[in-house]
Length: 338
Image (cartoon, rainbow, N blue to C red; front, top):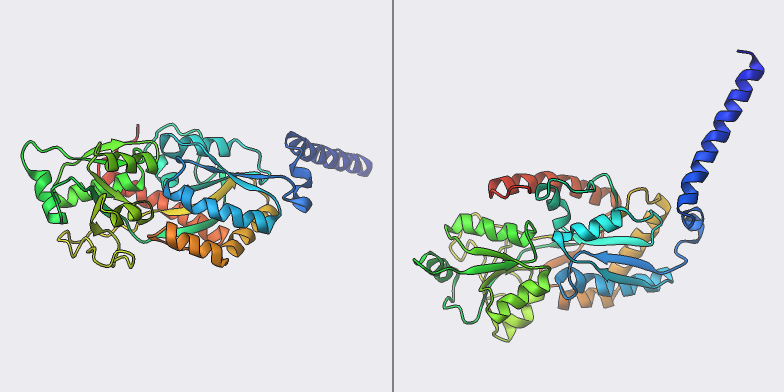
């Protein structure tokens, strides 16, 4: 091949490459200008659970702070169902332009161990942005009508012949479900699982007496403990929760070697989100977390969690580690993917 032929070939390859790149941009016209002008329209944060749950309560004030910092409206879009799969699939199929994100919990990394045929890969089809909060434990609560005032009394009640007690959760395979089944194993009980579509419906079931027991994040049950509608019997963290100083840890309540710190909350975008947009969002999150108004809102409404704000790289590592860790736990408690 002559020198001129080589030159023409290289030119054709360059033109072809540029054409391919432009074709990719044309599929999502917003992306081409996103690098320099992002954001220039409202940002949607998809929430995989019903309004009123812990995740919703945490992300709602965060979205207000982010709106101020980014100069654009940041709003929540609740899409509950299938333990977060519906919302995750929606975001995975959204344009990687930074205008559709997902704020989710550890159920996100649990789902590969629950569902055989997920239409997305939790590690490959999303762009980690930041972990927002980390859990420190759940509260074991019962409806006020349940005749048990301690964890040991609840265990004895559960073991009594012909006495079927139920516990509620926001769905199959979430961290509440896992913590409850681990408790069943450790305590030798057989409390029956009743799943609901989100934390709020799950909590309402206990308040109404439709279910009797829950192992839930402190933030959504605290007000009902204070009013006497629910009784707190134990805390699953390593040490007592400052907001519930009289509630013993699981070990103090007689169930040894049981520590479950609960879930995390984090934000991700679709696969292919540019580093520029990721950094813009990450900076907005960390600045928001530093704001006294948000700190106060989280302190009063999201008890049982601590603010995080880890980097995209750190959050990506946590996701990878948790997929493996929860897969092992699911096998231990005999929850099979379906």
